[in-house]
Length: 311
Image (cartoon, rainbow, N blue to C red; front, side, top):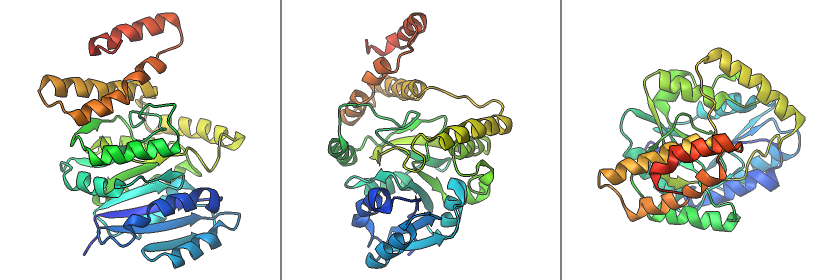
């Protein structure tokens, strides 16, 4: 039986503090025929490669790939994806944790996705677009509980996305192969996900946010705001602009607003539900928190969102 989902978990350094947490959260699906899991150590300079291999050997259902050098985010994911057999790829950064029922919920979503939808991004606690939900006082355990509640009470709706964050992303494998995977020109990382989102859109496919799947995102565990990271971000942003001159660099608030506008349409069409109301509650406060800092822009923002009856 061919799996529905092929996970590629990309790790680099800090196995015990980061990657191990991600892998342990995936244990409930290790024996599932619908899921295969590939774990890639991307040339770690510490002992993470050996620990990754040992962990996978001790846990059936996890397959290990060890690179002797750092292939970068794009190169590492491409290598892992080349081994996948599933209908959908699920690219997973190692600084993620999967709540109860997460992959069960995702399996249902991908199996019911319209043919034109080739990429699906889960919601999370930390992202730079409309995938981010808002509850700043929630801790790790509370977010996992929120995720479980979302999985148990699906809305069965897909939300708009201009681009997707690749902390965790589901992509039809046929479309991934058609587009040639991630562009390795971005080196160690940053903006290859934005580039893929735009290339997918330009090829005539759609990408959506699924609020029926939640994945906890701890944030960048590889660079952690270092000088190296800032330099990569600056360099790769220019590279993205050269490849896509019309790319929009939107604030997170715009992605959130697009989802809230989609809610409003569903309400007008009498497609509202208690499940959507729960999700809306996790978003509305963000419109206040994300409002522009300048008084004039804040006033204009307030006028723009007034019709949503939030303020």
